[in-house]
Amino acid sequence: MLISLALAALALRAGLAMRRRRRRSEPRERGLLARHVRFARPAVVMLLVGFVGGPLSASFLRDWTPFATLHGWLGITAAALFAVAGWLGLQLERGGSRDRARAAERHGLLATLAMLAGGIAAVAGMVLLP
Image 1 (tube, rainbow, N blue to C red):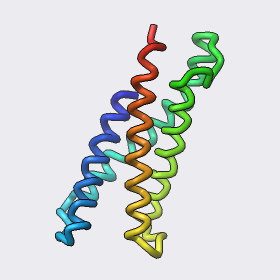
Image 2 (image 1 turned 120 degrees about the horizontal axis):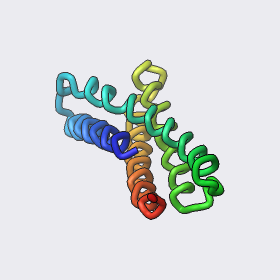
Image 3 (image 1 turned 90 degrees about the vertical axis):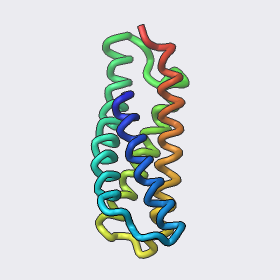
Image 4 (image 1 turned 90 degrees about the horizontal axis):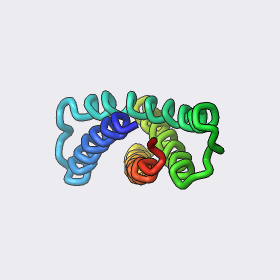
């Protein structure tokens, strides 16, 4: 999961750079969107696969009740935020949004909140390590 979060952090960094340029009315930096997508897609997929694996591991390998910890609930929150941010990102990429600026702001806000929730979930999960 830490690798997934690292990839997501790289995607966030590129996304924030795009936002900064957009807010300053600067021209797009060549390749920045491609870099953002290159990191974001595998990060979201890996995070969602890890989210599914967490409760399975808790149930079958450790005989724990899934989502009985703060880590589990933070994981649900992070996974939901990453999924929605990813979906919005796909809509933006495919041109499915009439108000691109507003959709991009929502996508960025959700992605930032997802990173925050994911980071806190990672810290909360440290106490669960064997």
